[in-house]
Amino acid sequence: MNHKPLRTLIVWTIWAATALISYLTLYRGNDIWQFIEHDSSRISWLIVGLFIFGVVSSFILTLFITFEAITALRVDDQVAGKGLKAVGKLGRKLGVARFYQALRIATETNNTLPDIETLLNSELGVYQRFSHTIDVMGTLLITLALVGTVVGLTMVLTGLTGSLNALGYDQELMMSGLRKAMSGMGTAFYTTLLGIVLGGVLLRVFAQITEHGVSSVYDNVMKTCLVHCAADLQPSMQRDLHFLDSQVESLGVRIRALQHAFQETRSAMTEFREESVRLRDVSREENEILLKNMRLHRHSVEMMRYEARAMRRMNKSWWARLRNALRGPRS
Image 1 (cartoon, rainbow, N blue to C red):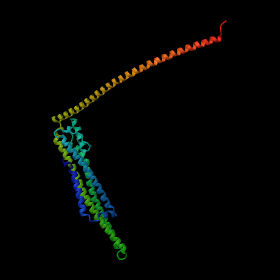
Image 2: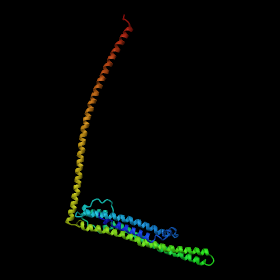
Image 3: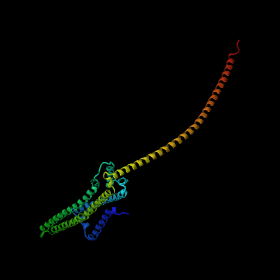
Image 4: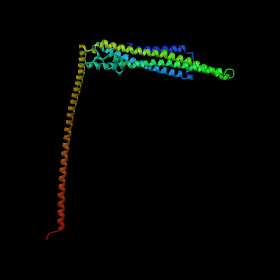
């Protein structure tokens, strides 16, 4: 397995582990976390919170840079000796994938020469700006350290002034001023230590790691374009041949899709014909049954009609006999 795309992530992890081990070794016996918990100025809270945000952001940026490096390596393997037409689906539409997609669109028009440096800078520029933002966070932590130093010295001067004013007549007030002065000294010392170490050393190194990772991805993509895609980036016979090959390949894909559609249509027509024959046979059987039932019904109607006429004749003769009997013999 090629570990080159994972270089930025590996360096970032090594630096983070080194920083953590160094902190646990050098500052484990100090009361830094107790000071942060009881810091009345809250500047140390702001420094630690901003540092954690910067570290998390740097780690997320490192993951994105690693994905970009893996995509660049995959494209390098695809286009080796084949040109831009060999670039397949790249999964996530990140900077490198968008760059190659835009490059293919520009070259397939066959009449434009794209500025690959500007195009690549526009796609990877977001990572560079993000890395620069992390570096600015480190500078901001140093500034907050200086602010904490000034606030701590102000607390020292205020406490000493109160102690001097209470000297000789108010022992409790003098001790309170001294405690305030010592608290100010702690604020000045610890905020300076936290800001310079967390911002000036750790966070800036994280920013440098991510910035170098972006530069590495940029160099790899440029190398791939100049070595394997040079024929596709300028008007030439080889570029025309690549363009023609891509068109022929696209036409072949469409022809295969059309053949597949014809096969499916033929299968559908065969199934339709078989279904029509089956329905015709079923309809013929149903028609014969229906005709038979109609004949039986007609015969039943004729029999009922015959019985009705017979009953009518029988009823009529009985009534005639009765009527003649009632009339009596004629004179």
